[in-house]
Length: 234
Image (tube, rainbow, N blue to C red; front, side):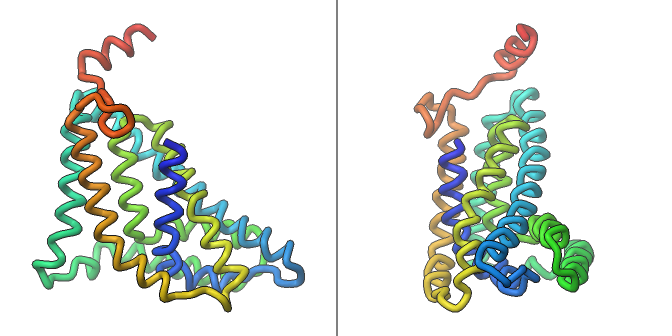
């Protein structure tokens, strides 16, 4: 699970360069030495990882509720279908969903809070920027959250999203240190491949929910009676 999460985060990090790249390039990092620059960037990314871990804990807990209710299979299949619809529908509809006033208000608050923190060059402000940046909309974070909910465990959800965040650090560290050498053509190529990756994740979640008993791909999911029995034994 941890290896899967790191790979997932690493692949998604190239998309993050486009989404979070401007923030990473503008961070009020300490530039006096390479060491201080690296430490500053790592502190910022630590904030992001912690936010992802908390999000994973919450959605893992939600998935656990579905597991206790005996709906883990249905949840996995439903989430897989949701990802497929999210990937396919935009090609058939010109309606834009991102201009939602209910989402814009909290998003504006987060962005304004980040902007204020940019005025202070300290490790505490960098850490806070990272915490807030983890709340900004990101397609790959959404995919990670959906996968987390299908795990049916708060702890597993927290671990998955934490390692997802760790998987994004190499690219984010690279853009912070080697900002003049980042090839944005690579980011654009990755962006074109994102729909294919989303379709793959959607199909994997559906196969996982089919409970085929295939290790790693479609492992046996506990039924409601099995979960309750296991809980009573503990």
